Image 1 (cartoon, rainbow, N blue to C red):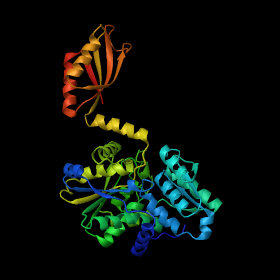
Image 2: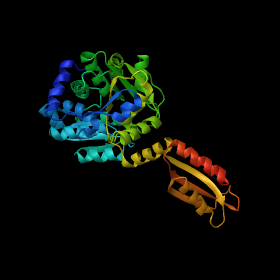
Image 3: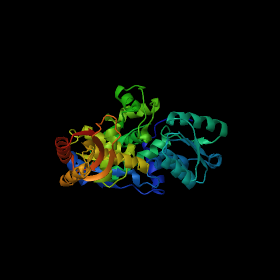
Image 4: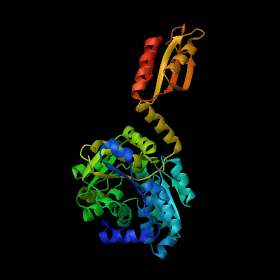
Length: 407
C-alpha cells in the first residue's frame, strides 16, 4: 500500500463527478415522528437506498475506477464483515475486474450471500474484521491482487465524502450530522467536507460500547486500545483504531459517544416503526446518539446518516421482540394457578377482560418448585404499552397464586 494521505477537496469533488455517472444521490428525508420526539428537525440520509444497501459502494467504486488496465487484470481483494465486500463486488463487476473477499466467520449470512450474488468469490477466515484483514493482506502479497481497503485509502475516503456533498446540496443550512464510526472512512470524509464548506456544522460520531477504540482515541487525541466484545452492529466492529485515520478524525469530529447494543436495537426498531426504514445496527446506532445529544440539539437541523440496511431477517425478528418487551408492549410472565379443571380457563378469561392478546402459553405441571396441587403457566402477552403492562401484572399478582415477570 502506498503512503497514506488524506484526500484533498479537489479529489473529493472528482469523486463526486465520477460517482454521479454511476449512482443516484440517496434521499434526504424529513421525519415528523422523530423530529417531534427529539425536539429538533431530524432528517434521515438514507444510504440504505444504495444498490447494495450501504454507503460503502461510494468509496469502493471510486477506488476501483482509478485502477489501470493492468491492475484490473490482476483483480481486487478486500477484507470485510459485509458492506465493504458488497461495494467492492459491485464496483468490480461494473469495471470489469474479478473480486476476492475475505470475510470473518462471524459475518452475517445475508451479507455473504449478497456478496456472492454480485459475482465475488468469498474466502472465510478469522473471527473478526482484524483477523480477516490479516488474511487478506497475506493473500494479496502472494497473489498480486490489488488490495482495496475498507477505509484507509484516500480514494475510499473521497468516495465516502460524497455523502456530505449530497447533504450540503440537499440541506445547505444543516446544523449537525450524526454518523456511526468504525474504521472511520465515512466520518473522515464527511468531516473533511463539512470543515471546508460548512465549518459551523457539528459532526457527531458514535460507536458501539463493545468496540469503542476509535471514539476513545478521538477523545484522547491519541491511540487507545480498550478491551472489546462482540456487537450486532457488525459494520463498525473494529478492534483497533488506525493511527493515520485518527489524525484526520481528531481534527474534524466535534463530539463522540458510545451507544450500547440495547439502545442500538431500539434505534433499529424506531426507524422501522416510525420512519418505515429497515436499518442494520451501524445504521440504527445514530438514534442512540441522538438520544444522548438531544438537549444540545434542540431546535436544530440534524441529519442522521443511516449508513446501511443489510440486516439478517432473523436478527430483525429478535430485535422487534426485544424492543417490544423493553418498551412495555410485550410481556413475559409466569403465573401459578390451581391444578384443577377450569383454572386455565379462568386465567384466559381474566386476560381477555384485561384486553390482552395471548401470543404464547405453556402449561407446565412438572416445574420442580411448584406445589403438587399447582401448575405454572408461562405466558407471552401483547399489551398496549407500559401502563397497560403494569395493570396486567398487578391484576395477575393479586388474583392468582403468584406471578413472576420475566424481563
